[in-house]
Amino acid sequence: LVQARILLAVNNGSEGFAQGQVREMEWTSVNGWASVGGSVLGTSRKVPWGKDMYAIARTIEDHHIDGLLVIGGWNAYASVYNMMNERAKFPAFNIPIMCLPASISNNLPGSELSIGADTALNSIVDAVDKIKQSAGATRRCFIVEVMGHWCGYLALMSSLATGAERFYLPEEGITLQQLQEDVEMLKRGFLLGKRLGLVIRNEAANEIYSTTFICSLFEEEGKDVFDARPAILGHLQQGGDPSPFDRIQASRLAGLCLEKLIEQCSQGDTTNCFIGLQNGKFVFHDMRDFDRMADMQFQRPRDQWWLKLRTIANIMAKIAPEA
Image (cartoon, rainbow, N blue to C red; front, side, top):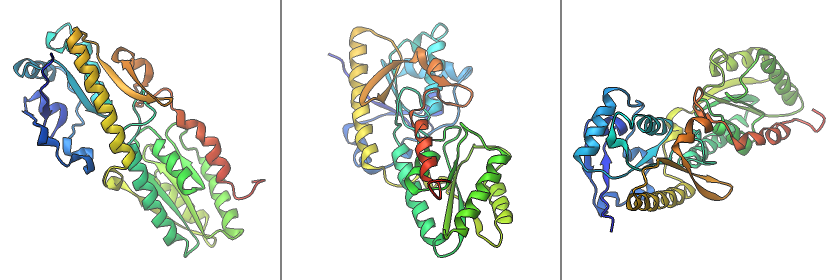
């Protein structure tokens, strides 16, 4: 029989774990968590390296940990990947470690959807719908900036869901020619009777052509035809109650990960894995494939299924069939 103990690295993720800040959890420790966002776990932007690895190894040994379930985003995956590569130096890392994808950016390889992405998308759509109601009273175009780092999932999907005229993704970038064409498209639309315009921009779509720059450009070029206003949603996208999909998906993924970890501990299997939803099925991937499946420079999957929806979004944004 495998006796399981659950330890929680409190407040600051891998840093807390490296500093030995862990506490044992009981059955009632997670009471009421189903309706609470993942921020209750705490987080850290730091990927452990060097002396941090030694501290983490000591914590694993001191608490007699036989397996780890790591819930988090890119930095969590990168931390486990680094730990796996440091096994020769730190024998304590020779335990099964499982990664569960939790990121509003939906930028993790091996899974079509990460926990939190659906909730964030719902928050964005709710905010944009309210903006559209306000803009509908005037001839105004809003440039809405959303999160996502170097992954344009939130920008494209919110564009589809809200009927935006244009979207800017880091996967495509932004050019001056595109901006000129978009201004002309908006002007034609407003001259034909449109009362509002909507453009959604990913926060990392382009370093030079920022949301403020695009808004100023549209305001100047569209004067006497339409006004332009920026709307940077910011951390509004990270808050709110989890959507039913995220709540159910998180429970299913966590259950499968724990079953896998118990099985590995029983069999002495120390393979590190990350789980994901692909083609309607839950799949475990070997952590050794992480760098092959991910774009390490831009911190996003090499295979992004949702990019195929760009064509549909562009067609729906046209002001007329021949446009």
